[in-house]
Image 1: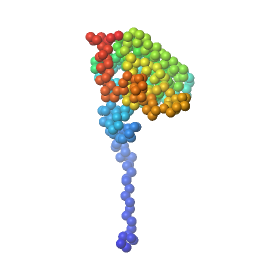
Image 2: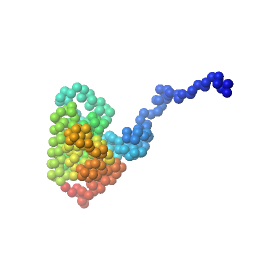
Image 3: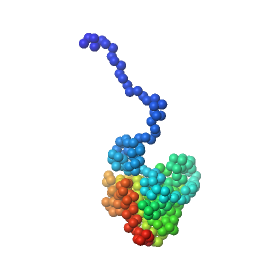
Image 4: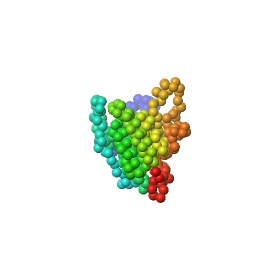
Length: 289
């Protein structure tokens, strides 16, 4: 006992801090943490599961090209209007520099990718918004590309399919961005009057001027699970109407329950469900217009 009392205390063992060399041996991006449940998983497994969390089923944001790969037939996609670039009409400080940075990071020229392709052999014109580019905000180029895509669908006499993901109109372009709401809506009206089929698929988030225009004008309006869909934010609405809103307000499920969506579709089922819709509108190999 006395021996133990007067003996020198043993040194505590602490975990060794990995050296910079050891850190470099671990490839960057090999693991991904779910923003919803905070669990970590291999990025490769997440990609195989279409960027849907393996633990809580949370649908993470996809890039436009990831959406093309997951949905369209291999090698069928042909992009158009890729080189249209935004100007800086208001002389907004740093705006053009931010656009250039997003171009490098996303491999896109703007926040929407448009082109032709096929889904299980059924031809479509498709527009895919990418929230990684200026949060998918709608500027003059985004509106122009979507309007041109609608016109191309009318020319080819094929359905128009759009995946929306946006924070709303782009403030750096002022009224020019707001004008795109009218332009895209008018293009869809002319397309619809000719008998064209419009399918809108809202992903997280679809808000502001995008939700108040072309995103909500489909013959079919679909959404991914738990996608945020709405015009103004919760705080603004609560302060305006002086009432507390439900916890699930502005979610895809809430909108479906209140008749503003036709269906909420899991990402793994999107291609199958879209194929069914496209086949319904086809008769003897020709699209019913």
